[in-house]
Structure formats: structure tokens, C-alpha cells
Amino acid sequence: MPYLSPNKFIEFQDLGLIHYQDAWDLQEKLLKQKVEAKIEASSSNIEPVTINHLFFCEHPHVYTLGKSGKEENFLLNKEYLKNIGAEYFHINRGGDITYHGPGQLVAYPIFDLDNFFTDIHLYMRSLEEVIIQTCSQFGITAGRVDGLTGVWIESESQNPRKIAALGVKTSRWVTIHGLALNVNTDLSYFNHIVPCGLIDKPVTSIEKELGVKIEMKEVKKVMKMAFLNIFQAFSI
View 1 (cartoon, rainbow, N blue to C red):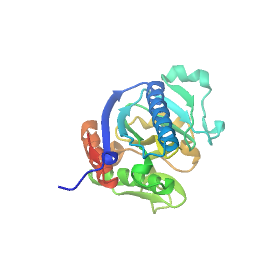
View 2: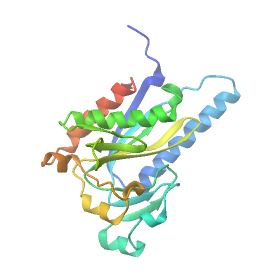
View 3: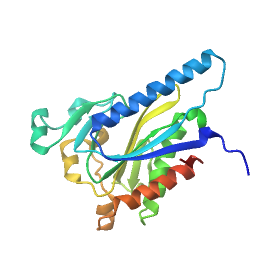
């Protein structure tokens, strides 16, 4: 039996419905721990052994603006947020504004890319591939649009529809934030923003494309396997 490096293992946890701030705090805590461990190992001239984490969750209604995003892409008066039961956060990931809410599968990989590959472009494309393979299992053909991050339906058409958004942050090759796939999402919440700063690109969901609701647990099962397959990893 071949030796399996512990660095190729991923600790998986389903956080269920969790407040955005709590999920963000958890990611920042793990990021700090891993970066400090890598710095300490480097100063001692030893190879650090880091654990990779993968969290699945859903959030109550929330809008998040990335560090490179534009405030004007948030179309609501922030005081109106309470009327629609939503919150707003300006956060430290890349990308512009997006929405998270019930019925949307959010995945947060806290990976040490030294365990896989030290290439941010490849990492982003790998996250997109996770979504593409997940959609494929439900009979949906998804793909990429040149020059744009995310995953799209009818990606080669004049008017592709966005089904998933990505945004990440890395420090010493440790990643936080991740991807959001619209499964049974209430898409009306996207009407209050310019999603990802793209004026002419509509959003969609698995439910909208298929015309029926899909069990979230089934999507989670498929996406977990896609992560393990694409990153050639093992679940613990």
C-alpha cells in the first residue's frame, strides 16, 4: 500500500446554517494558526505539517464586498437591510460584491497550497472545476467565461448566466474564503446589487435551471467528492 502524506488529507465539516461573522472568525483563526506554524517551522529549518480543512455551510441573508470591490455596486441604502433581513460586510477577500443566503452552498477550503500546488491561478481554476463537475452530476453543463472568475451556464453565449461566485485570500499559501454555488437560492436578493460588479450578467441556480428543488445534502455529497478528486486528496 503506498504511503499517504498526511498533508494530502482534508478535515471536512458541515457547519450547517451559520452566521457569516462566525464563519469568518473561524477561518481567520485557522489561518493565523497555520501561518504562525509555518513561520515557526521555517525559523527552525524544518518542514511544517499542516492540516487542510473544508467547511460547507449556508448563511443567513448577507452581502459581502471584497477588498477590490466598489461600494456603488451595493444598490441598497444600508438602513434598508433590516427590512429584507440581511447584513453587510466589507471583507478581505478578492472580488467585488456578492450575496449569500439560505439555499446557497458555500464552501470554505482552508488549504495550505504547499500541500498541493503553489499557483493561485491554478487554485482558482480548480475551484471552478469543482463547481463544473458538481453541476455536471445534476445534468447541468457549466463552464468558464474568458477573463471572468466564476462558473457560468451557456458560457459561450452572448448572455451567460452565473451560477457560482469565487473569492479568496491567501497568506503564506494558506487559503480562506472560497466559493458559493446557487442551489435553491432566492435569486431576488441579487436584485439589490451588481453581482461581482458585472452589470449585464444575470445569475441563476440549479433549481432555476432544472425547474425543481434539489436536496442540499445531495449537492454537498457530490461537491465533496469533486474536491477530493480535483485536489487528489483524502477525507478525514
